[in-house]
Image (tube, rainbow, N blue to C red; front, side, top):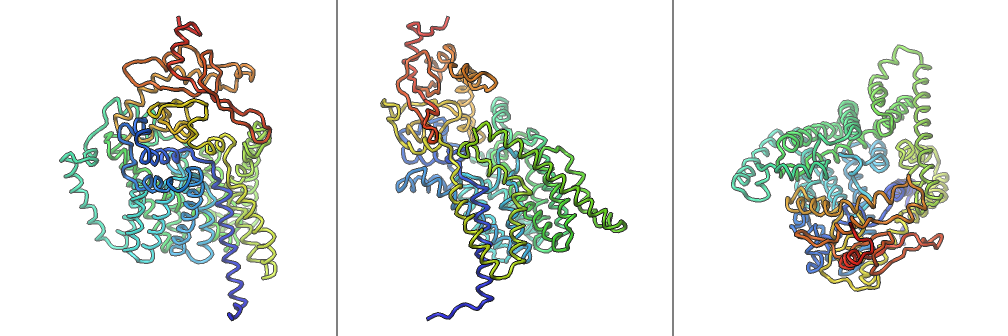
Length: 639
């Protein structure tokens, strides 16, 4: 018979469980699952082509070599897992597992870098504050879908935690495993790890000698190292600049550099203010940013070299941004422990402006923050309190503006949470996302054991359950697609295995997941064109063939036009003829459109709204040979 735990141990266990529960709530609320979309579709395709090469082998992504898939273990593992479960289930629970790994690895890392108390605030910061880095419209650490990136990022954080504990072999193993999942994220992390290692022991500078054999391989023309000395030709470079602007710093927007500068300032100040182990990593983060961004500017924007463009060394920003988010929360903890709420509010106001629509106004409070103690030393306390009240008022005004814009979108979605999750959209407002958990932490610290038990049972447990229910954010259409996995007969006709299907413009899950067929074209297919010139050229040819169709599609979906007019709209005859006409280059065999065309449809699939039970969208399948025959017979003949 085991003895009951002492009251102090029971109390610490409850606190640890509550701390983990709060982190889980943040993950479930802020990393809601939106389905197999974005880059997760591409990794699904890479797994599918390994299982059914006879079907997917002639897809645009794979007919020219498959881009970066040859450098990652992830598609092979997914292909094996698909023998045991369906893609929708695998990608959903895989995404959650990746989030939990990333969060656990972050905690392991921060426990070695920051003191007790401060480390927990920092952990909440990296979970709740904006994750966006690089070209911020596209990228964020611990992304909301299932790809090898969050797995590699979590392994890199484990490696950094091992390094901070001087466990060099385990650190190397973690970084090597991260490289097997996503070499680009691991190489980006190494750009920060190396300066940190040099600060520990200058002999690590000798690692730079490894560049000599790499140059030798490049001179010898050994792929992919030959790309170190080969520049992209004019045509390829034009396509890369047009379709993948994130590769070129000169194509980044003002907002991208605003986010970057905020991280640089936070890391620079934290190096001075937090010091110790964490301060050393802040310095390494700044050095790594200099290496990664400087190399990109010189080798990619300047010299247009192929391999540096593919390595995407600007991705070093992911780890620097993660450190900056931890630093912001750690600074807030320092200010609150010093009972300097005004200074904490000023920092919160600065970062809210930086991530909002305030342009470069954030620089004023950001530069005032480190100087505030010296400025206020010779002034009465009411002046400092005024700074705090003004910062709080600024945050409230920013939130009011943000909430109004979100409510407008919610109203356009007919006040339906399944179409527009306004609760999640409001929670991503940075001061609210971090402020609510920190308020809960402060309340927990003030309560006695009985009050903490009530708070855990009556608040935290229900929040975990509600967050778990709300985590699945898939829209009705996404759910319909994923529930129709490998329904090759969804349109009521048999589609040949070697057929290429154009499904709208954006959709890859339609042909790949539903019809189990190759996709003729989608812009998502071109994400790997930096690794393969033939893919880029072929993609541009296909885009040129489809350009009139895509323009008509954009015209029909323009919400500035009346709903009745949009309901009657369809793709023009000339656009259909150009898309389907036989020629020297590839053409689609089938086209799936949400329009009732003058030409005959081979079949139709209606997706019903689960709430109203009305038809949400009807997709129609058009066989290109039928389209051309109808056009020749006069059903919309082009003159």
